[in-house]
Length: 150
Image 1 (cartoon, one colour):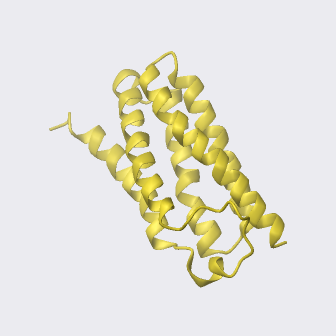
Image 2 (image 1 turned 135 degrees about the vertical axis):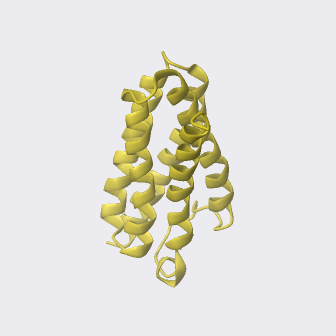
Image 3 (image 1 turned 30 degrees about the vertical axis):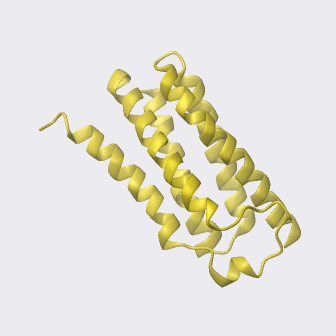
């Protein structure tokens, strides 16, 4: 039974982070904001995040299964906390600049995880590369929304 506990905890943490996107949705407030022309359609975000959350969970599990609770696993968890906070800050609190600051910290934690995971498990590091790319894009989008609405 104890073999199933860590994967269950990892899954619960990732599902918890993902659920903030369902709890704090863009809604009318976001719809009325000025956005850049390259803003993706709304349907793309849940599709992209579903794939990314699966990769985040699997990468976290792979690293945890090798190192246990170590630097990479701790950075993974910290990054997931920043990830979970973003929807609440942006869509719940309507604080675009603070959401950008949170996203910047999330982006740094993703990069740190890739660096820390690389010598432990390259597959886990590779799994975070699309997440890094998406967070980079999301940061640019968040910045433009902030700039256009400041």
